[in-house]
Image 1 (cartoon, one colour):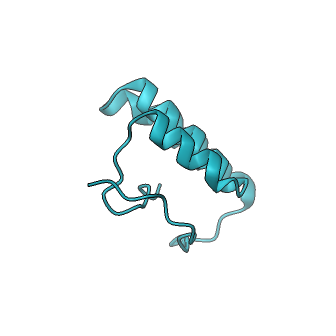
Image 2 (image 1 turned 135 degrees about the vertical axis):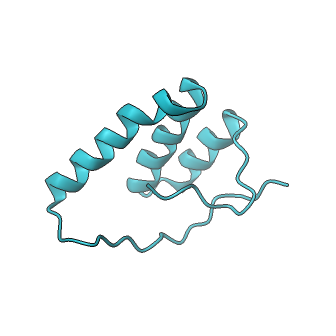
Image 3 (image 1 turned 120 degrees about the vertical axis):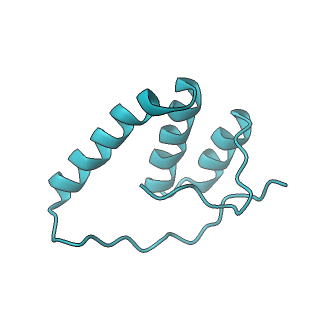
Length: 81
């Protein structure tokens, strides 16, 4: 069964301090390499777009992207990167 995206944002922490630029670089690396390991590229693209929408506080757009791509979120949470 599918649940809507939750509006609460997860707390993120790192084992070592990172600058905003380093974090952005790690995120870019994740999105660039993730489709190569498993899954369909269009699903990864939809997840990335939904994540960007959430980062911009556009919950409705993120939900529409997830719904439009028929992505199932059984707990209402996207995976944390």
